[in-house]
Every structure is written in C-alpha cells, then in structure tokens.
Length: 190
Image (cartoon, rainbow, N blue to C red):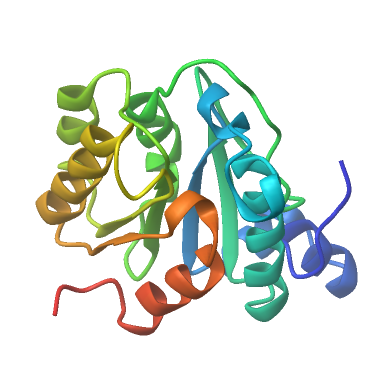
C-alpha cells in the first residue's frame, strides 16, 4: 500500500522521526470500518464505500498533516500508519477495535468511529467505550434510509454514551467535511 501524504508514516519520513514518535503527536484516532459491507458500490460515481473512504481519509490527512492516526477494523483490527486502511472484509468487530485502540486513549486525544453498519456485539462495544477517558464521536456512512438504520442508531447511542457527537456522511460521500466539522467542535455535544 502507498503512503498517504500527511499520514503518520509520511510525517515520520519527512521529519526523520520514528512512526512511534510521530504517532504520539496525533490528536485524533480514526477507527475506520473496512468490513465486507464497505465493499458496496453505492457511493460517489458508483465506487465502493471503501474506495471513497480512502479518498476522503487522504484529503483529511493532507489537510491535518500528522494529526490523524488510522486504525482499521473488521473481524480484526490493525493500525494503518501509512494512512491507507486495508480492506479486510469480514464482520464488524467494533468491540475488538475499541479494545485494540484503548492503548492510545490519552488525555486530549479524540476518537472517531466511521462505520456503515451494526457491530457484531453492541453491548460489548458500549461496555468498552465506557472505559475510555476520551470522548468517542461517530460517523455513520451507510445509506440515509433503509438497510443499516439500526447501525446508525447504535452509533448515535455510542457517541451519546461517551459524550461525543454523531454525524452522518451518506455512503461515505462528504466524509472529510463531516469529520472536520466534528473536529472543529472538539467532538463535544452542543
């Protein structure tokens, strides 16, 4: 996979620092859903949600160089220091992703979950989210109506439970602008 300009890896290379040092300066952790449903080709120009996710994340990282760390998840979770999350397919183990990302839960850091569907275990995800000191905001990227509406409702509950905000970017379109709006408000409820 290529390295996205403005990603943690790109900034580390540019500054001659380690990825770990550069990661320490990231103020936002994005948990990006790369499960099977993100392969649906119902986004901008009939592209998959995943392909548009890559474009929108690249735009965000270019604009906020070194400030965004990406963790992608499906049945497993992994860091994407190059800024381009791998399409993993599979299920939506958000609880596992939150457990995996917990190590980065430090004061002043923001978390944003980007997903198009319901997690495998809603209660487990809510329980782990409750242990975070940081607020967790969410962006629902499924279709506005129809399939996935329970996923949207869950993401709203997750954000509310952790004191974050919830937003929608219909089928990933306008994701960068939606995430920027969450970041500008500090992820706090208004």
